Length: 148
Image: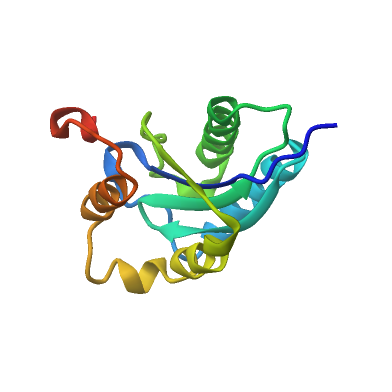
């Protein structure tokens, strides 16, 4: 048996960062994504976001890679969203994502950060948040490829 303790803070946005995730129906989407995570035998600690992006704090089952995990979430939720009348303007997820590993002592802080996305984004755009988080996590990036 393998033993791991890795927490991932994952962020991805809607295609072109369009505001297509309505406040009224987003809990349905979060429940659907939670089902995907549960079916992969992974653990969801928190999910949240705004009309144009999602944050997920999770730990992965040892049998799945991070890239496969995110691909499954995005592909399955995209298919579900496009069939759901409540999200008629949704046209897909952006292909890029960010994933940051967190230590156990940071889990509560990240949970609160995700819970407070609406308040947080009253003062900071998604693009500025994404850049800031990349910098805070010492991830180098080229601005011209950041939001394709």
